[in-house]
Image (cartoon, rainbow, N blue to C red):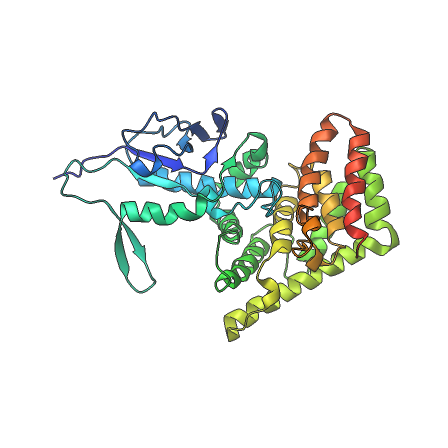
Length: 383
């Protein structure tokens, strides 16, 4: 007897949108209760968005595993694209977001046979276990519900060309998935596994055919490409270029940026080696904010240099300057001094001013841009 086909939804409860967003093959549709007949009670009053494929799948269509895989891969690209523009800083915008914020649930129409209970297969690595679907939803829901996130079309600026290039490229999809795993919520016992994902993403990108990268030259190549890209816009964005010349290049500053990143990535490699081969952990890599901030820029300049434009100058210039700051100062906050509790960390300042300056460039607001650059540079006055 043929198994009856059942309707399906792809639902992200922790995202919100103001209006329908269509980007390449993907459509984001606001949940207004239009599919409550298919929705589990858990999700009926939580907002969220449905994910559709513009030409191949609308919410409520019959389940197809090939569609599910394509949607899940598209969400991996969406996450990476969002993180590239919006670093998940703790207190600043967008706040404490993680992989759980982008949790996507496949919802399948209940079986008409009421004696049938839908369960989700899970594994502990040794054997499989069938968990009640309601219990599974509850388990996955807890971490994501800590923080909801509004998605705008601007936040998906990089999605457009990363999607075209990566949706059918297993190697590049693998790189994005490895990076995204580094933004999973973990406890302090499990967090060190992220250095394995971080190093694997770097090494996978290095191995892609046609890339001018080796383990020995990838950092040098990153800086060479950045310098050449910035030089192409030396007559534009004069405030940024002056900042770059005075605060990044002057007094051998660019070499300091390069040396600091090189040292960090070498220590990351050593930490990965010690963890994998000797089960030794390096407490300095409980968080990996330097990697999380750097890697999207590395991926973009290597894979999409021809797609980048003058708006990317802000992020590149400020990042090169940020590299000159002691990495231990990036996310440092004095929790014992109440007057400092609401003060942004240097990483939060970098994230906010990068977004702000990029917006002000469109308005030719030179005075505001200068104020932001001066504010960002204050992070270096306490070294």
